[in-house]
Image 1 (cartoon, rainbow, N blue to C red):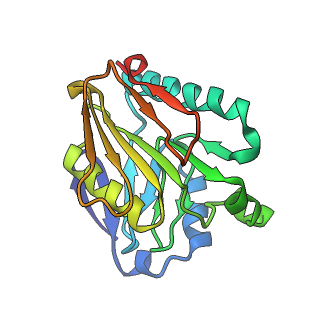
Image 2: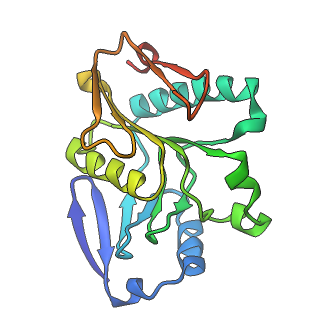
Length: 200
């Protein structure tokens, strides 16, 4: 295993990791609950420390707003927090800060699949930048979400109060400047509106 540092993450790569099965990766994550762990499409393992307190506060407020919307129409699908990993079509395992999967996709999974890193790409994902994250790295991650099937993906950058809205088929994200705005869930999450001011 050859480690390297990428921004504020530790990246592990090597022949053993390339051969690691999904089940072995899941077990590895269960053995290290203190870390946030993702896996790239090339089977590199990315280890991240827990977020800082301010990021945790923002993440809680983000998920609270999403949860309130879900309570009004739980039949549409399921919401997930930042501790949730998804196995995407390209083989990567990523954990967005907030996400939603339609009932049709979720109910098509077996209980065993739901209990592990479900092999499904959420239709809606949010990545909330923390002070130690790289905006450039997160922007590349948003494109990975779209390539794997996300229909609406938001990158929120609190320190500059900027929101990047990604949609399939659009060469560039829509940029919303200022957290006095609300973001619409559009046709993907009908009726959902995120009040950005609560994430300051």
